[in-house]
Image (cartoon, helix red, strand yellow):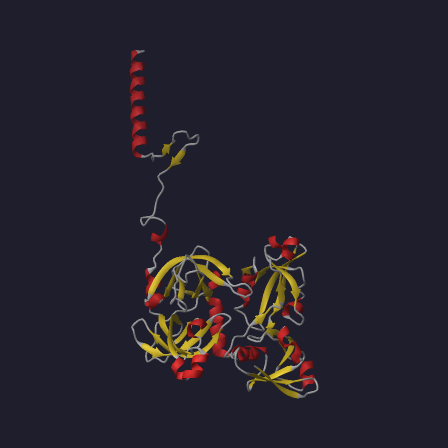
Length: 463
């Protein structure tokens, strides 16, 4: 009996030593903290952490910044502005002319010197000077510009290949993704700021088909035309605008997506002007009283309010009441997402449109067409391209037919006549008509050559 008790005590002691050693050497510590007045304990465990910590410290901006600063240029716009017309009458035109210099940024997109910038950076320029990051300056020529997208293409002649940025795919940009804005704010060259993509497909001006990338990377006057890049150094946008009562950065800025900018550049190089592919629908504004009355303001998608006659949408069978949910690979919840995607397409391109029709999901292939009607700048006259029937009726293959005019011009009997020339410049279609009317002055004389259904020509002078 005594022998048995001794063995039991030895076994118990050995077990205790073994359990203690196991706990000390092998078990990981888990600490439980219970705050006073808390009913549920807060448990922390020994989890592995990054050596660099979390958040921004894990993102390396240096490679993207080094790659970008050498491809971003300083653009100087030199022009002459006229002063008071009364002073000009008394003292002569030379006394009232004042030199003016505007500045901005641009992005080199090819080693031979093609540069993309904003249209408003180079507008009304009589001379353009581009300064590279190595401080070498060149005279620049405007290859083309598109005011509606605010994109312009410049060219400088260089002896050696330049550092440049390739266009990335802006559709792949993600909200919350880190980005860099590189430009020349306030004349400070090669300035890099960082932020995230705050939103996509953002429209900032009512009535305009806009689709901007919104970011909180600091952008100020002088940044316009500069690069918005991701951490790989891919060009995903052209910095364009800020909204601010002071004119300076207040926490967000806007960039033209690279897919739109690239398409505009390609069109300017190939055609000399932008080719716009039109779907052919009118969308109902979700904020309108009509939409709110019908409960359509809560729809996730674009409600088709009307389908344009002879458009790609009409040919594909889209109907009023359809809700567009997706186009191509882009999911659509608002109109700016739809127009943003279409801005990267041309007439003749086919797109897959996913619609909801009475609760049934359908995929409809639509061939985009050229815009059929256009409201012309300055005068506000609405015109359309000539149909085959119109060409026979008026005896011309060139020109645009007037379909509506503002109240101010109703007494001129312009509707259903064809515009052939404006200030001696021939008008072939609505694209040419838009460019010609954009260049006329609101305060000067405008001469318009018309032809009516009797094939009689007439010239009207507008003051």
